[in-house]
Structures are given as C-alpha cells and as structure tokens.
Image 1 (cartoon, rainbow, N blue to C red):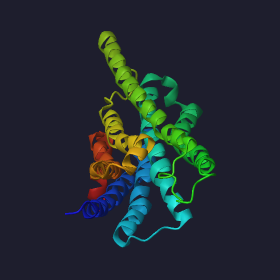
Image 2: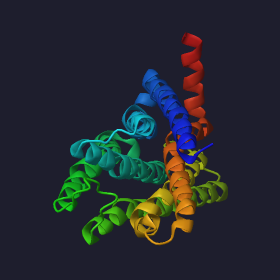
Image 3: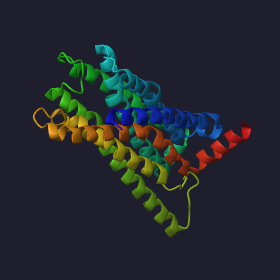
Image 4: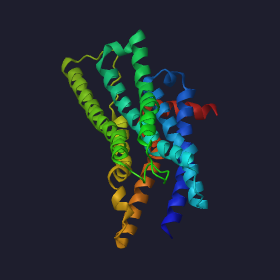
Length: 289
C-alpha cells in the first residue's frame, strides 16, 4: 500500500472521528446546567471547537486534495495553512494552558469563587486563546507572507521571518503548557498536604486531582511537537535536492507527524472521560435520549 493511500485513508477515518468525538463533548457540556456554569467545562467546549475545525474544514480539504490532486488557488492554500498550522494548534495549545491555570486558581484562590472577580477571570481564561490566535497570530501571518514567493505556500517557501514566525506560534505556548501542568501538580500536592496537616478543607476547594488536565497537556505536547519541529526546522531537509535515497524516509516522517497532529483532535476528548462531572452529565444525556 502506497504512502499516499495510507495517508488518505487515515485522514478520512480521523476526520469522521474528530467530528463525532468533539460534537459529543460539546453537546454534553451544553446540555448540563452545572457544566455550563463551570469555567473548566466551558473551556473544554471551547477547546473542542478548535479541534472540530480540523474535522469540518481542514480534514475535508486535505481529503479533497489527496483524492483528486487538484491544485488549490493561492488564497485557499494560504487559508488552509493558517488554519492548519497556526490558528488550530495555537488556540488548542493555549486552551490547555488556560485549563491548567484555571485548575491552579480554582483550588488556590478563594477569590475565584465569588462574584465579578470569578466572572472576569473565567472570561479571560476562556477568550484569551482565541483573541491571541485570531487577533494576533493571523495579522502576524499576513505580515509574514507579504513577500511570499510564487509558490503561494507559506510552509514551503520559508524566509527567515516566516521561519521565526513558525517557531513563535507553537513553542512558547507549548512551554506554557509544560510549566502550568507542573504548577497544577505542585499546587494540588501542596493543598493536599495542607489539608492533611490541618485536618480542614475550605468549602470553596474542589480537590479533584489534575489527572485529566495533566494527561491532556502531555498528549497535546506529544502529538503536536513532531509537526511543529518539522515545520519550523525540517523544511530544508525534507526537500532533499541531492539525496534521493533519504527522501522516502523523510516523507514517511512528515506523514507520520501530520497523522499524529490530526489524531490529537479526536484522541483528546477521550482524556476528559477521567472527569467525574463530565461522565455524570454524559450519563444523564443518554438517559434523556
């Protein structure tokens, strides 16, 4: 079986799974009165919206291009690239970091449980990834492609400015995910130790361990990093102008990186099964149906 056929089949299967898993997750959150008022679960729904874009837009376009080998017009190619390589990975990675911050603030600050402060902090954590992704990264992308060559491809005609932009769009957000996930674990351990020593538990603290958010953090970094490294550092090697014997190997590496990148969008919803409240809401939704 050729590499192109493997890539096409997996992309079709993954696209269907992305739409199903994320649509179910969003439905479960929106169907529950309790989860609709939970900052964590609203952020899960927001994260799923970012992932479902992969299934509703990016996946079908990649399938169409792979099946029919049709050339894309310049603007369509750039729109696909900015969604596929900039907006979706940046927004979803930042959303994971915000989930970690939400956990830290939720069990570490009494202020988070009250009034206007709670509303403001929830709004900031929920909207910040989208505001940065669309309001900052997209304009920077347009600036980076100002002097784009005749290929009409941002990813395969890379200048120094574009190379720097690809690095900035993922690696700082990934670093923030790592730092906040470690901070979430540290905060949980500190609060749990304090409760054990004092034998008291503040009423505003929900002491669920950060198993799901930390698992999601690890999975996101694991599955996004290969394609990020390939885009930011591997473009010159992948072209293999004088080393034909190495091109097949690098093509396989590139395809595997792309498949892992796409797979993340349907694997991640399964991580949230660890959340007790989400499981209960899903059970109620099934019972109503």
